[in-house]
Amino acid sequence: MKNRIIAFFLFTTGLAQGSAAQQLLSLDSCRAMALRNNKELGMSRVKQEVAANLRKSARTKYLPHVSALGGYEWTSREISLLNDEQKETLSNLGTSLSTGIQGKIGQAMQQIPASVQQLLGAMGIDLQAIGGNLGTALGGLGTSINGVGQGIVDAFHTDTRNMFAGAVMVTQPVFMGGAIIAMNKMADIGEDMAANAMEQKRQVTLYNIDKAYWQVVSLRHKQKLAQGYLDLVKKLDGDVQKMIHEGVATRSEGLSVSVKVNEAEMMLTKVDDGLVLSKMLLCQLCGLPISEQIVLTDEEREDLSAPELAPQMELEQALANRPELKQLQNMVDMSKQLTNILKAGNLPQVALMGGYMVTNPNLFNGFQRKFGGMWNVGVLVRIPVWNWGDVAYKVRASKGATTIARLQMDEAREKITLQVNQSNFQVREANRTLEMSKANIRKAEENLRTANLGFSEGVISSTTVMEAQTAWLQAQSQKIDAEIEVKLSQVNLQKALGVLGE
Image (tube, rainbow, N blue to C red; front, side, top):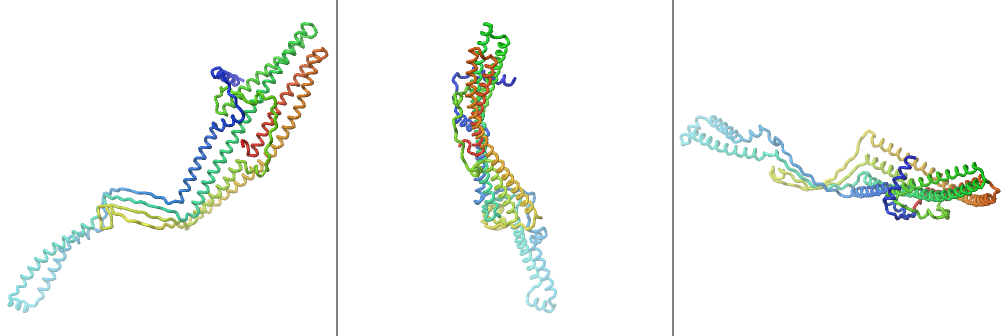
Protein backbone atom coordinates (compact mmCIF):
# COMPACT_ATOMS: atom_id res chain seq x y z
CA MET A 1 0.00 0.00 0.00
CA LYS A 2 2.87 2.33 0.82
CA ASN A 3 4.42 1.73 -2.62
CA ARG A 4 1.12 2.53 -4.35
CA ILE A 5 0.83 5.78 -2.41
CA ILE A 6 4.39 6.79 -3.38
CA ALA A 7 3.78 5.89 -7.03
CA PHE A 8 0.52 7.84 -7.02
CA PHE A 9 2.31 10.84 -5.49
CA LEU A 10 5.04 10.75 -8.13
CA PHE A 11 2.51 10.42 -10.92
CA THR A 12 0.33 13.30 -9.70
CA THR A 13 3.42 15.46 -9.14
CA GLY A 14 4.48 14.83 -12.73
CA LEU A 15 1.01 15.73 -13.90
CA ALA A 16 1.13 18.99 -11.99
CA GLN A 17 4.50 19.91 -13.47
CA GLY A 18 3.70 18.73 -17.01
CA SER A 19 1.55 20.11 -19.71
CA ALA A 20 -2.17 20.32 -19.13
CA ALA A 21 -2.87 18.67 -22.48
CA GLN A 22 -3.34 14.92 -22.44
CA GLN A 23 -1.99 12.61 -25.10
CA LEU A 24 -4.64 10.53 -26.84
CA LEU A 25 -3.45 7.02 -27.60
CA SER A 26 -5.05 4.18 -29.49
CA LEU A 27 -4.07 0.53 -29.28
CA ASP A 28 -2.21 0.76 -32.59
CA SER A 29 -0.25 3.85 -31.50
CA CYS A 30 0.69 2.13 -28.22
CA ARG A 31 1.89 -0.88 -30.17
CA ALA A 32 3.91 1.28 -32.55
CA MET A 33 5.62 3.17 -29.72
CA ALA A 34 6.38 -0.04 -27.85
CA LEU A 35 7.94 -1.63 -30.93
CA ARG A 36 9.96 1.51 -31.55
CA ASN A 37 11.21 2.02 -27.99
CA ASN A 38 11.48 -1.49 -26.56
CA LYS A 39 15.10 -2.13 -25.58
CA GLU A 40 14.90 -5.91 -26.00
CA LEU A 41 13.71 -5.40 -29.57
CA GLY A 42 16.60 -2.99 -30.08
CA MET A 43 19.01 -5.69 -28.93
CA SER A 44 17.33 -8.17 -31.25
CA ARG A 45 17.85 -5.80 -34.19
CA VAL A 46 21.54 -5.53 -33.32
CA LYS A 47 21.75 -9.34 -33.11
CA GLN A 48 20.25 -9.52 -36.60
CA GLU A 49 22.96 -7.19 -37.88
CA VAL A 50 25.59 -9.33 -36.16
CA ALA A 51 24.18 -12.48 -37.79
CA ALA A 52 24.13 -10.79 -41.21
CA ASN A 53 27.78 -9.78 -40.85
CA LEU A 54 28.72 -13.31 -39.77
CA ARG A 55 26.96 -14.65 -42.87
CA LYS A 56 28.95 -12.27 -45.07
CA SER A 57 32.13 -13.33 -43.29
CA ALA A 58 31.37 -17.00 -43.97
CA ARG A 59 30.96 -16.26 -47.70
CA THR A 60 34.55 -15.00 -47.85
CA LYS A 61 35.84 -18.50 -47.03
CA TYR A 62 35.11 -19.51 -50.63
CA LEU A 63 37.43 -16.77 -51.98
CA PRO A 64 41.24 -16.65 -52.19
CA HIS A 65 42.95 -14.96 -49.27
CA VAL A 66 46.02 -12.78 -49.70
CA SER A 67 48.48 -12.17 -46.88
CA ALA A 68 51.78 -10.34 -46.67
CA LEU A 69 54.61 -11.34 -44.34
CA GLY A 70 57.76 -9.47 -43.41
CA GLY A 71 60.48 -9.84 -40.84
CA TYR A 72 63.95 -8.90 -39.68
CA GLU A 73 66.34 -10.97 -37.55
CA TRP A 74 69.71 -10.19 -36.01
CA THR A 75 71.94 -13.07 -34.85
CA SER A 76 75.15 -13.05 -32.85
CA ARG A 77 76.87 -15.46 -35.27
CA GLU A 78 76.66 -15.92 -38.99
CA ILE A 79 76.02 -19.12 -40.92
CA SER A 80 79.24 -20.69 -42.27
CA LEU A 81 79.20 -23.14 -45.16
CA LEU A 82 82.91 -24.07 -44.58
CA ASN A 83 84.40 -25.35 -41.40
CA ASP A 84 87.59 -23.88 -39.94
CA GLU A 85 89.83 -26.70 -41.33
CA GLN A 86 88.44 -26.15 -44.83
CA LYS A 87 89.05 -22.43 -44.56
CA GLU A 88 92.64 -23.03 -43.44
CA THR A 89 93.24 -25.48 -46.27
CA LEU A 90 91.91 -23.12 -48.94
CA SER A 91 93.85 -20.15 -47.55
CA ASN A 92 97.19 -22.12 -47.69
CA LEU A 93 96.39 -24.06 -50.84
CA GLY A 94 99.21 -22.43 -52.86
CA THR A 95 101.78 -22.94 -50.15
CA SER A 96 100.87 -26.58 -49.73
CA LEU A 97 100.89 -27.10 -53.49
CA SER A 98 104.29 -25.40 -54.10
CA THR A 99 105.89 -27.21 -51.15
CA GLY A 100 104.66 -30.51 -52.47
CA ILE A 101 105.91 -29.82 -56.00
CA GLN A 102 109.32 -28.65 -54.73
CA GLY A 103 109.65 -31.83 -52.69
CA LYS A 104 108.81 -33.99 -55.70
CA ILE A 105 111.29 -32.04 -57.88
CA GLY A 106 114.00 -32.46 -55.24
CA GLN A 107 113.35 -36.18 -55.06
CA ALA A 108 113.39 -36.45 -58.84
CA MET A 109 116.70 -34.59 -59.11
CA GLN A 110 118.26 -36.80 -56.47
CA GLN A 111 117.25 -39.83 -58.46
CA ILE A 112 119.07 -38.63 -61.65
CA PRO A 113 122.15 -40.81 -62.14
CA ALA A 114 125.59 -39.19 -61.65
CA SER A 115 126.57 -39.94 -65.24
CA VAL A 116 123.58 -38.00 -66.47
CA GLN A 117 124.36 -35.12 -64.15
CA GLN A 118 127.95 -35.02 -65.48
CA LEU A 119 126.73 -35.10 -69.05
CA LEU A 120 124.29 -32.22 -68.37
CA GLY A 121 127.09 -30.31 -66.65
CA ALA A 122 129.31 -30.82 -69.70
CA MET A 123 126.52 -29.39 -71.77
CA GLY A 124 126.39 -26.32 -69.54
CA ILE A 125 123.14 -27.22 -67.77
CA ASP A 126 123.21 -26.49 -64.00
CA LEU A 127 120.56 -28.61 -62.32
CA GLN A 128 121.01 -26.84 -59.01
CA ALA A 129 120.32 -23.47 -60.59
CA ILE A 130 117.30 -24.85 -62.40
CA GLY A 131 115.98 -26.28 -59.13
CA GLY A 132 116.45 -22.95 -57.39
CA ASN A 133 114.64 -21.08 -60.17
CA LEU A 134 111.81 -23.57 -60.09
CA GLY A 135 111.57 -23.19 -56.32
CA THR A 136 111.37 -19.42 -56.69
CA ALA A 137 108.71 -19.71 -59.40
CA LEU A 138 106.72 -22.21 -57.41
CA GLY A 139 106.88 -19.94 -54.35
CA GLY A 140 105.34 -17.07 -56.34
CA LEU A 141 102.74 -19.41 -57.78
CA GLY A 142 101.90 -20.67 -54.27
CA THR A 143 101.35 -17.11 -53.10
CA SER A 144 98.99 -16.49 -56.01
CA ILE A 145 97.11 -19.72 -55.35
CA ASN A 146 96.86 -18.78 -51.67
CA GLY A 147 95.15 -15.58 -52.78
CA VAL A 148 92.74 -17.55 -54.92
CA GLY A 149 91.99 -19.88 -52.02
CA GLN A 150 91.40 -16.94 -49.70
CA GLY A 151 89.07 -15.48 -52.32
CA ILE A 152 87.08 -18.70 -52.29
CA VAL A 153 86.86 -18.54 -48.51
CA ASP A 154 85.71 -14.92 -48.73
CA ALA A 155 83.13 -15.86 -51.36
CA PHE A 156 81.60 -18.37 -48.98
CA HIS A 157 81.30 -15.67 -46.31
CA THR A 158 77.49 -15.37 -45.75
CA ASP A 159 77.16 -12.35 -43.44
CA THR A 160 73.79 -13.64 -42.19
CA ARG A 161 73.79 -11.79 -38.89
CA ASN A 162 71.30 -9.26 -40.36
CA MET A 163 68.58 -11.06 -42.28
CA PHE A 164 65.49 -9.59 -43.97
CA ALA A 165 62.64 -11.62 -45.45
CA GLY A 166 59.22 -10.88 -46.93
CA ALA A 167 56.51 -12.72 -48.82
CA VAL A 168 53.10 -12.24 -50.38
CA MET A 169 50.99 -15.40 -50.27
CA VAL A 170 47.70 -16.32 -51.93
CA THR A 171 45.71 -19.29 -50.59
CA GLN A 172 42.68 -20.71 -52.38
CA PRO A 173 40.74 -23.55 -50.70
CA VAL A 174 39.79 -26.29 -53.13
CA PHE A 175 38.27 -28.97 -50.93
CA MET A 176 37.94 -28.72 -47.15
CA GLY A 177 35.84 -31.82 -46.56
CA GLY A 178 32.60 -29.82 -46.81
CA ALA A 179 33.49 -27.68 -43.76
CA ILE A 180 33.17 -24.36 -45.62
CA ILE A 181 29.78 -25.29 -47.07
CA ALA A 182 28.53 -26.37 -43.64
CA MET A 183 29.88 -23.18 -42.09
CA ASN A 184 28.00 -21.04 -44.61
CA LYS A 185 24.79 -22.96 -43.99
CA MET A 186 25.25 -22.40 -40.25
CA ALA A 187 25.67 -18.67 -40.89
CA ASP A 188 22.42 -18.64 -42.90
CA ILE A 189 20.65 -20.53 -40.11
CA GLY A 190 22.07 -18.12 -37.55
CA GLU A 191 20.66 -15.16 -39.44
CA ASP A 192 17.27 -16.87 -39.71
CA MET A 193 17.39 -17.68 -36.00
CA ALA A 194 18.06 -14.03 -35.14
CA ALA A 195 15.06 -12.99 -37.25
CA ASN A 196 12.85 -15.57 -35.52
CA ALA A 197 14.06 -14.42 -32.10
CA MET A 198 13.20 -10.85 -33.00
CA GLU A 199 9.72 -11.93 -34.15
CA GLN A 200 9.21 -13.70 -30.84
CA LYS A 201 10.28 -10.57 -28.93
CA ARG A 202 7.92 -8.52 -31.11
CA GLN A 203 4.95 -10.75 -30.32
CA VAL A 204 5.75 -10.79 -26.60
CA THR A 205 5.99 -6.98 -26.64
CA LEU A 206 2.64 -6.67 -28.40
CA TYR A 207 1.08 -9.17 -26.01
CA ASN A 208 2.27 -7.17 -22.98
CA ILE A 209 1.09 -3.91 -24.53
CA ASP A 210 -2.36 -5.32 -25.26
CA LYS A 211 -2.70 -6.64 -21.71
CA ALA A 212 -1.61 -3.31 -20.21
CA TYR A 213 -3.86 -1.35 -22.59
CA TRP A 214 -7.01 -3.33 -21.82
CA GLN A 215 -6.15 -3.30 -18.12
CA VAL A 216 -6.22 0.50 -18.20
CA VAL A 217 -9.50 0.46 -20.14
CA SER A 218 -10.99 -2.01 -17.66
CA LEU A 219 -9.98 0.07 -14.65
CA ARG A 220 -11.26 3.25 -16.30
CA HIS A 221 -14.67 1.66 -16.81
CA LYS A 222 -14.62 0.32 -13.26
CA GLN A 223 -13.72 3.80 -12.07
CA LYS A 224 -16.84 5.19 -13.76
CA LEU A 225 -18.82 2.28 -12.36
CA ALA A 226 -17.49 2.91 -8.84
CA GLN A 227 -18.33 6.58 -9.18
CA GLY A 228 -21.85 5.69 -10.33
CA TYR A 229 -22.27 3.27 -7.44
CA LEU A 230 -21.02 5.93 -5.01
CA ASP A 231 -23.58 8.37 -6.38
CA LEU A 232 -26.33 5.77 -5.92
CA VAL A 233 -25.48 5.00 -2.30
CA LYS A 234 -25.03 8.70 -1.54
CA LYS A 235 -28.47 9.40 -2.92
CA LEU A 236 -29.85 6.51 -0.88
CA ASP A 237 -28.03 7.83 2.18
CA GLY A 238 -29.58 11.26 1.64
CA ASP A 239 -33.05 9.76 1.30
CA VAL A 240 -32.61 7.63 4.43
CA GLN A 241 -31.37 10.62 6.41
CA LYS A 242 -34.50 12.53 5.39
CA MET A 243 -36.65 9.57 6.40
CA ILE A 244 -34.88 9.40 9.78
CA HIS A 245 -35.56 13.10 10.21
CA GLU A 246 -39.23 12.45 9.39
CA GLY A 247 -39.28 9.50 11.80
CA VAL A 248 -40.09 6.85 9.20
CA ALA A 249 -36.68 5.18 9.29
CA THR A 250 -34.44 4.03 12.10
CA ARG A 251 -30.94 5.23 12.91
CA SER A 252 -29.69 1.67 12.37
CA GLU A 253 -30.78 1.84 8.73
CA GLY A 254 -28.96 5.14 8.38
CA LEU A 255 -25.76 3.67 9.80
CA SER A 256 -25.99 0.67 7.44
CA VAL A 257 -26.29 2.99 4.45
CA SER A 258 -23.41 5.15 5.73
CA VAL A 259 -21.22 2.03 5.92
CA LYS A 260 -22.08 1.34 2.27
CA VAL A 261 -21.08 4.91 1.36
CA ASN A 262 -17.71 4.43 3.07
CA GLU A 263 -17.20 1.12 1.29
CA ALA A 264 -18.02 2.75 -2.05
CA GLU A 265 -15.53 5.55 -1.38
CA MET A 266 -12.81 3.04 -0.46
CA MET A 267 -13.56 1.03 -3.59
CA LEU A 268 -13.31 4.18 -5.72
CA THR A 269 -9.97 5.04 -4.10
CA LYS A 270 -8.57 1.59 -4.86
CA VAL A 271 -9.73 1.82 -8.46
CA ASP A 272 -8.17 5.29 -8.79
CA ASP A 273 -4.85 4.00 -7.46
CA GLY A 274 -4.95 0.96 -9.73
CA LEU A 275 -5.73 3.14 -12.74
CA VAL A 276 -2.78 5.43 -12.01
CA LEU A 277 -0.38 2.50 -11.62
CA SER A 278 -1.71 0.80 -14.77
CA LYS A 279 -1.18 3.96 -16.81
CA MET A 280 2.34 4.23 -15.43
CA LEU A 281 3.03 0.65 -16.57
CA LEU A 282 1.57 1.37 -20.02
CA CYS A 283 3.73 4.49 -20.35
CA GLN A 284 6.81 2.50 -19.40
CA LEU A 285 6.04 -0.17 -22.00
CA CYS A 286 5.45 2.51 -24.64
CA GLY A 287 8.71 4.27 -23.82
CA LEU A 288 6.97 7.37 -22.43
CA PRO A 289 7.75 9.12 -19.14
CA ILE A 290 5.72 7.47 -16.38
CA SER A 291 4.24 10.87 -15.49
CA GLU A 292 2.92 11.36 -19.02
CA GLN A 293 -0.79 12.24 -19.15
CA ILE A 294 -2.46 9.78 -21.48
CA VAL A 295 -6.04 9.06 -22.47
CA LEU A 296 -6.94 5.89 -24.35
CA THR A 297 -9.43 5.97 -27.18
CA ASP A 298 -11.33 3.01 -25.71
CA GLU A 299 -11.70 4.52 -22.25
CA GLU A 300 -14.97 6.27 -23.05
CA ARG A 301 -16.49 3.57 -25.23
CA GLU A 302 -19.68 2.36 -23.64
CA ASP A 303 -19.68 -0.99 -25.38
CA LEU A 304 -16.35 -2.81 -25.53
CA SER A 305 -17.78 -6.02 -26.89
CA ALA A 306 -17.66 -5.04 -30.55
CA PRO A 307 -17.15 -8.36 -32.33
CA GLU A 308 -13.66 -9.06 -33.61
CA LEU A 309 -13.20 -11.97 -35.91
CA ALA A 310 -10.88 -14.53 -34.40
CA PRO A 311 -8.21 -15.67 -36.89
CA GLN A 312 -9.17 -18.85 -38.67
CA MET A 313 -6.19 -21.00 -39.49
CA GLU A 314 -5.28 -24.61 -39.86
CA LEU A 315 -3.26 -26.00 -36.98
CA GLU A 316 -0.31 -26.97 -39.17
CA GLN A 317 -0.20 -23.50 -40.63
CA ALA A 318 -0.35 -22.05 -37.11
CA LEU A 319 2.53 -24.28 -36.04
CA ALA A 320 4.51 -23.07 -39.03
CA ASN A 321 4.00 -19.46 -37.90
CA ARG A 322 5.19 -19.83 -34.31
CA PRO A 323 8.65 -18.23 -33.95
CA GLU A 324 9.47 -20.55 -31.04
CA LEU A 325 9.11 -23.61 -33.28
CA LYS A 326 11.10 -21.90 -36.00
CA GLN A 327 13.93 -21.30 -33.55
CA LEU A 328 13.86 -24.93 -32.42
CA GLN A 329 13.98 -26.03 -36.07
CA ASN A 330 16.95 -23.69 -36.53
CA MET A 331 18.67 -25.41 -33.62
CA VAL A 332 18.09 -28.82 -35.21
CA ASP A 333 19.49 -27.62 -38.55
CA MET A 334 22.42 -25.92 -36.82
CA SER A 335 23.27 -29.14 -35.00
CA LYS A 336 23.21 -31.09 -38.27
CA GLN A 337 25.63 -28.67 -39.91
CA LEU A 338 27.91 -28.84 -36.87
CA THR A 339 27.99 -32.61 -37.37
CA ASN A 340 29.06 -32.06 -41.00
CA ILE A 341 31.87 -29.77 -39.86
CA LEU A 342 33.08 -32.42 -37.42
CA LYS A 343 32.94 -35.09 -40.14
CA ALA A 344 35.22 -32.91 -42.28
CA GLY A 345 37.97 -33.63 -39.75
CA ASN A 346 38.31 -37.13 -41.20
CA LEU A 347 38.37 -36.03 -44.85
CA PRO A 348 41.27 -34.78 -46.99
CA GLN A 349 41.80 -31.06 -47.38
CA VAL A 350 43.26 -29.50 -50.53
CA ALA A 351 44.35 -25.91 -51.10
CA LEU A 352 46.25 -24.04 -53.81
CA MET A 353 49.07 -21.77 -52.71
CA GLY A 354 51.15 -19.21 -54.53
CA GLY A 355 53.07 -16.04 -53.94
CA TYR A 356 56.30 -14.11 -54.18
CA MET A 357 59.13 -14.26 -51.63
CA VAL A 358 62.14 -11.96 -51.15
CA THR A 359 65.18 -12.29 -48.85
CA ASN A 360 68.27 -10.27 -48.00
CA PRO A 361 70.88 -11.72 -48.25
CA ASN A 362 69.60 -13.86 -51.12
CA LEU A 363 70.99 -17.16 -52.47
CA PHE A 364 70.21 -16.66 -56.15
CA ASN A 365 73.72 -15.43 -57.06
CA GLY A 366 75.84 -16.49 -54.14
CA PHE A 367 75.27 -14.63 -50.89
CA GLN A 368 74.34 -11.13 -52.08
CA ARG A 369 73.62 -8.32 -49.67
CA LYS A 370 70.55 -7.15 -51.57
CA PHE A 371 66.95 -8.19 -51.94
CA GLY A 372 66.20 -11.00 -54.35
CA GLY A 373 62.98 -12.94 -54.83
CA MET A 374 61.15 -15.65 -56.67
CA TRP A 375 57.61 -16.73 -57.55
CA ASN A 376 56.18 -19.96 -56.17
CA VAL A 377 53.05 -22.03 -56.81
CA GLY A 378 52.07 -25.21 -55.00
CA VAL A 379 49.35 -27.55 -53.79
CA LEU A 380 48.83 -28.35 -50.11
CA VAL A 381 47.13 -31.63 -49.26
CA ARG A 382 46.31 -32.71 -45.71
CA ILE A 383 45.09 -36.27 -45.14
CA PRO A 384 44.15 -37.35 -41.60
CA VAL A 385 45.60 -40.77 -40.84
CA TRP A 386 44.95 -41.60 -37.18
CA ASN A 387 43.42 -39.62 -34.31
CA TRP A 388 42.35 -42.40 -31.92
CA GLY A 389 38.69 -41.97 -32.85
CA ASP A 390 38.54 -38.34 -31.65
CA VAL A 391 36.45 -37.15 -34.61
CA ALA A 392 34.13 -40.17 -34.45
CA TYR A 393 33.36 -39.50 -30.78
CA LYS A 394 32.64 -35.84 -31.51
CA VAL A 395 30.34 -36.77 -34.40
CA ARG A 396 28.39 -39.14 -32.14
CA ALA A 397 28.04 -36.43 -29.49
CA SER A 398 26.83 -33.95 -32.10
CA LYS A 399 24.25 -36.41 -33.39
CA GLY A 400 23.03 -36.87 -29.82
CA ALA A 401 22.61 -33.09 -29.51
CA THR A 402 20.61 -33.14 -32.76
CA THR A 403 18.31 -35.82 -31.35
CA ILE A 404 17.77 -33.77 -28.19
CA ALA A 405 16.91 -30.67 -30.23
CA ARG A 406 14.47 -32.66 -32.35
CA LEU A 407 12.76 -34.07 -29.24
CA GLN A 408 12.50 -30.57 -27.77
CA MET A 409 10.85 -29.38 -30.98
CA ASP A 410 8.36 -32.29 -30.91
CA GLU A 411 7.49 -31.51 -27.30
CA ALA A 412 7.02 -27.84 -28.13
CA ARG A 413 4.70 -28.76 -31.02
CA GLU A 414 2.54 -30.79 -28.65
CA LYS A 415 2.39 -27.98 -26.10
CA ILE A 416 1.58 -25.38 -28.76
CA THR A 417 -1.17 -27.62 -30.14
CA LEU A 418 -2.65 -27.81 -26.66
CA GLN A 419 -2.26 -24.05 -26.23
CA VAL A 420 -4.08 -23.31 -29.50
CA ASN A 421 -6.98 -25.56 -28.50
CA GLN A 422 -7.14 -24.00 -25.04
CA SER A 423 -7.13 -20.51 -26.56
CA ASN A 424 -10.01 -21.47 -28.85
CA PHE A 425 -11.99 -22.73 -25.88
CA GLN A 426 -11.19 -19.55 -23.94
CA VAL A 427 -12.49 -17.38 -26.77
CA ARG A 428 -15.75 -19.31 -26.92
CA GLU A 429 -16.08 -19.33 -23.14
CA ALA A 430 -15.38 -15.59 -22.93
CA ASN A 431 -18.07 -14.87 -25.51
CA ARG A 432 -20.60 -17.02 -23.66
CA THR A 433 -19.70 -15.33 -20.38
CA LEU A 434 -20.20 -11.94 -22.00
CA GLU A 435 -23.66 -12.91 -23.25
CA MET A 436 -24.66 -14.14 -19.79
CA SER A 437 -23.29 -11.00 -18.15
CA LYS A 438 -25.38 -8.87 -20.50
CA ALA A 439 -28.46 -10.86 -19.51
CA ASN A 440 -27.55 -10.37 -15.84
CA ILE A 441 -27.21 -6.63 -16.46
CA ARG A 442 -30.76 -6.43 -17.75
CA LYS A 443 -32.06 -8.33 -14.74
CA ALA A 444 -30.02 -6.30 -12.27
CA GLU A 445 -31.16 -3.00 -13.79
CA GLU A 446 -34.78 -4.10 -13.62
CA ASN A 447 -34.30 -5.28 -10.05
CA LEU A 448 -32.74 -1.96 -9.08
CA ARG A 449 -35.52 -0.02 -10.80
CA THR A 450 -38.25 -1.92 -8.96
CA ALA A 451 -36.36 -1.63 -5.66
CA ASN A 452 -36.01 2.13 -6.04
CA LEU A 453 -39.67 2.39 -6.99
CA GLY A 454 -40.74 0.29 -4.00
CA PHE A 455 -38.49 2.29 -1.67
CA SER A 456 -39.96 5.56 -2.92
CA GLU A 457 -43.46 4.12 -2.29
CA GLY A 458 -42.38 2.98 1.17
CA VAL A 459 -43.03 -0.70 0.61
CA ILE A 460 -39.36 -1.80 0.40
CA SER A 461 -36.69 -1.23 2.99
CA SER A 462 -33.33 0.42 2.43
CA THR A 463 -31.63 -2.94 2.99
CA THR A 464 -33.38 -4.36 -0.05
CA VAL A 465 -32.37 -1.32 -2.10
CA MET A 466 -28.74 -1.76 -1.02
CA GLU A 467 -28.89 -5.41 -2.00
CA ALA A 468 -30.24 -4.43 -5.41
CA GLN A 469 -27.50 -1.81 -5.78
CA THR A 470 -24.84 -4.37 -4.84
CA ALA A 471 -26.26 -6.85 -7.35
CA TRP A 472 -26.27 -4.13 -10.00
CA LEU A 473 -22.63 -3.28 -9.19
CA GLN A 474 -21.58 -6.93 -9.44
CA ALA A 475 -23.42 -7.38 -12.73
CA GLN A 476 -21.83 -4.26 -14.21
CA SER A 477 -18.38 -5.29 -12.97
CA GLN A 478 -18.81 -8.78 -14.39
CA LYS A 479 -19.81 -7.30 -17.73
CA ILE A 480 -16.65 -5.15 -17.82
CA ASP A 481 -14.52 -8.17 -16.87
CA ALA A 482 -16.23 -10.27 -19.53
CA GLU A 483 -15.67 -7.63 -22.22
CA ILE A 484 -11.99 -7.34 -21.34
CA GLU A 485 -11.69 -11.12 -21.15
CA VAL A 486 -13.05 -11.37 -24.70
CA LYS A 487 -10.36 -8.93 -25.86
CA LEU A 488 -7.57 -10.74 -24.00
CA SER A 489 -8.73 -14.19 -25.13
CA GLN A 490 -8.57 -13.01 -28.74
CA VAL A 491 -5.06 -11.68 -28.10
CA ASN A 492 -4.08 -15.01 -26.53
CA LEU A 493 -5.43 -16.88 -29.56
CA GLN A 494 -3.55 -14.63 -31.98
CA LYS A 495 -0.35 -15.18 -30.00
CA ALA A 496 -0.94 -18.94 -29.91
CA LEU A 497 -1.39 -18.93 -33.69
CA GLY A 498 1.71 -16.77 -34.19
CA VAL A 499 -0.17 -13.98 -35.99
CA LEU A 500 -0.27 -11.32 -33.26
CA GLY A 501 0.20 -7.90 -34.79
CA GLU A 502 -0.33 -9.02 -38.38
